[in-house]
Image 1 (spheres, rainbow, N blue to C red):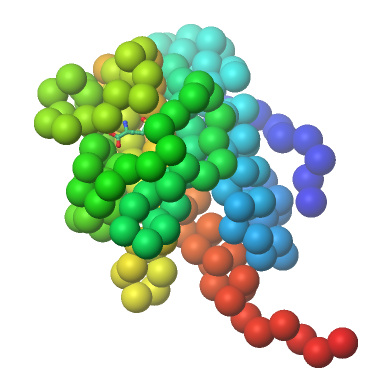
Image 2: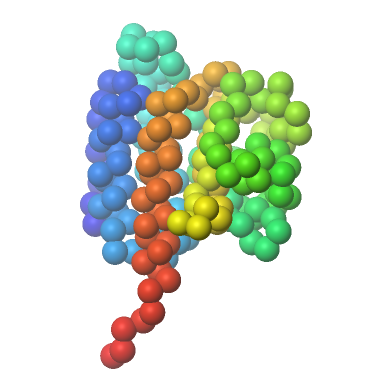
Length: 189
Ligand code: SME
């Protein structure tokens, strides 16, 4: 696997484009879901949060967008709740009920939800008072069943758009491929 993440691209789209093959390389062959979620959370964080200053500057010049990500992580479906998985960022709530908050709604509706202003989203769960906008992307099996969600928070309103939706859904799809691999029976010997 790759040993060092290369962060490249002036715009958000370019950064995702450079990031996706690196995510594929890192999770390729690894069937453990938690390990893959942990590395994906880290790589997204390194690309869009740790280097947010330069991205902010570039995006102001290029598209006017400024992510300022402050939390990236996964919640896994366990029985009838979402349970906190690998993440980067401040302390977060451990469990979210079906249909509750943005995460629970994305699970229930089985679709990506972009919230431009969390204060205007009824039932938003404020894990951090600094969160201003959010995107939640479901991870689905072929059957359509949601087995996890990817949740990203920003300290700025309107941080997420269709560029994020498109690329994050692709990334979520890659993790699904690995999940299916993990269900293959063990080979003898
Ligand atoms: N805001 C989320 C809860 C999870 S935290 O943001 C990490 C929600 O409303 O579901």
